[in-house]
Amino acid sequence: MTDQPRELAPILCADLIRKVDEQLIDLLSSLAPGEWEIQTVAPLWTVRDVAAHLLDTALRKLSMVRDSCYVEAVSIHSPQDVVSLVNRLNREGVTVYRRLSPSVLIAVMNLVCEEFADFHESLNPFDHATFAVSWAGEEISPNWFDTARELTERWHHQQQIRLAVNRPGIMIPALYHPVLDCFLRGLPHAFHRTHATPGTLLLVEISGECGGRWCLLRETNYWQLTRQSLGDFAAKVTVPQELAWRLFTKGIDRDSALRQIEIEGDRCLGEKVLELTAIVG
Image (cartoon, helix red, strand yellow):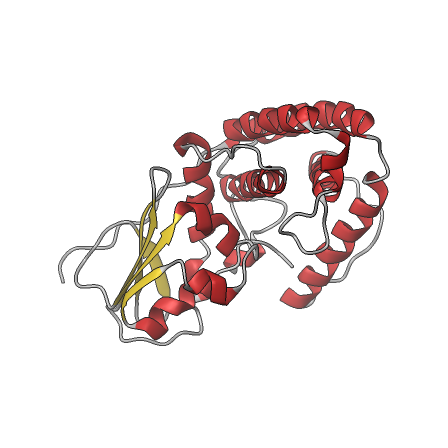
């Protein structure tokens, strides 16, 4: 094999956070009073709770990362410590901000989203981020990856609301493809305990106009994600774009997902794709 795998390019998407959040403000402003209480695919959260979470996480990021404001000492010794901390902070934030009336929440969200977008657009994308993308197995991440992760958060939580209240989604290539691209960057970590012969190739295809193809290559001691096909695939997994965001954010159970995806070749290897979780907690 003479060709070398082509590494994926950075996801430079800071400008998209503003666009996704503009859609969020319009969405929240359109909700009828009863729609705020509708259950979403997030098991413990209604529409009101998801909106509260989006406000809380933006405020936290601005306070801790932009303003270097840390009000409690936290000891992190393991990945589970990260999960426990994030779950606690999420729970506390939702408890506080779900108490806001819709009009107050929207007004505050409008202000916060503007500052949040300004902040991410101001960052050097290749400097080290304050927080690494833990679900991708990273201990140090560049700002562009952390910003892309924030885009996936803003996009998929908004999509949860849209699904719950039966509003059209924001599945357009300009906004959704970068989200999918970021999600799939977690594949090497999802497979890091999966052994295979060096040179083994897995193809993941997200079908639909927003999707694409990602190739996972087994090197001697690790898996590498690439867009370049270097040979025959041991397995090919095809996921509809309507399902992909729910699959990678714990928004659908495994059995239901399996009925909607297509696996060719090595089924055991292909099913490992369902273990990719691109959120913390």
